[in-house]
Length: 127
Length: 236
Picture 1 (tube, chains in turn brown, yellow):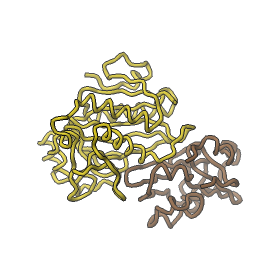
Picture 2: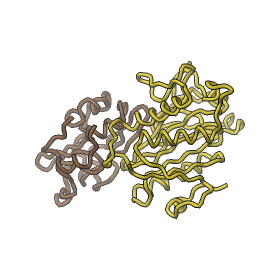
Picture 3: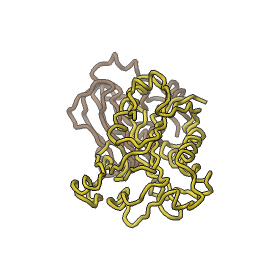
Picture 4: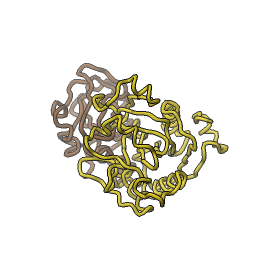
């Protein structure tokens, strides 16, 4: 799957897409492929605030569990309601319908730590 | 190929001691103090439940497990209930995934591949089963998998039945799969059975091949690199 060019990325394989001051966050296609078929997603509650790098969610497949980190600081304003019943949506569409949560960005200066698609592509193994 | 370390324990390690060692390796790997490191050990008899492990797959009470000399742990890995005991090799790869090396397949696939290739070196046909992870043979399941990633460093991993007593598995519903037999390499090979160290060594060979890492191999009693000693490996 191609890496969307207009998204930003963290070293821990989360993607970020901005709409005004709200950032949508998910895991990359590489990340979902390492875990195989996801069966459970533990999402944060709306209203929770995270610092950059905090553990914000857990994604699980039958045999694997992986922590997902808030790539930037912010307050959770929305979680993806689809994932409770259909966590496999992440496998099918990691960069789209499989988004995890939306954050209201707290500190715009932090955005510099994110990578653009080209930089992420360099660190990301290609299958 | 990247260099990685392996550390093999000859004596069975209590589950809790092994878990503490894994946590220290995980922190050291995340901090870049050690390279990728794989632990190969046997546990003293232990039943563990994964994250979503349901305790209705435990067929005994806590007291009965205690009376049988089996430790019981709930651990933060994926996967369901399983049994560990002497005669079973457990592989705990503390690997940083998603760097520049070619993880063309998923990590789960790679763990299964290590078991399949190891079996092949003993002329045993191992295979995957659709919708059921782990590695299987004609006689039943031989390798069980459950792992966790923290900051894209793996811990927990895979157990591979070599010559362990299967009685421990009779106290649980392994991986929540009812009516599915569990087997060991010694049951499959009979008299041609290789030694535990020989099988362990093959597992590490296949690990190198599948994971694309060149292993510098240590035994737990060797003079270990300082960074490994700092992780306080269990000593006997």
